[in-house]
Length: 414
Image (cartoon, rainbow, N blue to C red; front, side, top):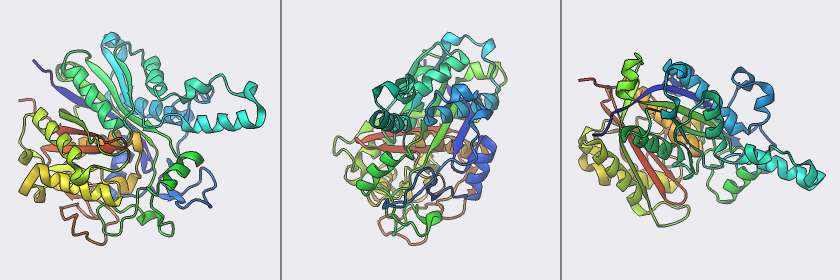
């Protein structure tokens, strides 16, 4: 018998706010966290804008000496984890820690550390490369640090599936609990990719927006004038818990995870398959896994990157899965606020979906001005709306053809 899995706490470090309350308030208000790059001199780059994390004092969450031995993506993950634990009100001293796991996602890992240490190698020689270089750089280290922090001795994994990493991590955590391999899993994703080399690579691919003269409007999902994504950074962490385990300790349940689908396009290393057929299969699998009908879905948090192909093909995929119901759905992309957090995107967007279900509020797709005939669904443009949500679906699609979808449900204990 499958066990029920619920979300009991969330934590976020994002370009628009940190922690559950500040982050969710910013989402409700349609705040945009995109501005000019300050992390390095981007004046010679085709894209000079990004969604950087602001007002983040790592010493509020991690000892200064310890923080210096972590890449930025790990710092974000540990900070968001501490927020999620506080939000969940969970006391790990009273739990069997062999039944507590950590499964995180990151598309890139410690690229900032890699660039810094490569520069030291080239300018000062191999003897000056930090002994912490490898444990700071490798993508699994955020999950490792979190396990050490709380003493989690259960499953510990890091998922690397590009921009689907965070959603895949949540899906794998969901399965670990419902099939009896864990009672609690700390999950989500973290990314800190705003570095000179990473930025240059995405610019060379012509994947990012070059609308540098209006940074607050540069990311415009589903708009006819969209011209590329905006890179973001941060972390989203969720506490997933088996339902009875959560109820026994009197947890304040946010939402229930009920479905997960994962597929691959097997088509191209960066371009999505025509008409989003791989994404459509992921959505179908997640809905079937939840044991519901497509018509039960009320809201979709779209991958919605603001690139010409993604938005067009994701719209087509939604129509394939939902038929006429596609026009009755509320669909929005919150990347116009947060930027694209790459491997952490699905985690942050899962938090948005969970709080949307909990609060009965659908966030807007901001920056929408010019309709695209090929993107003709209800994208909740420019202003969010109050609406009861029984089931929400979140999509994440990544380079390599990775597709991941989760379904969340308004909690019912009947």
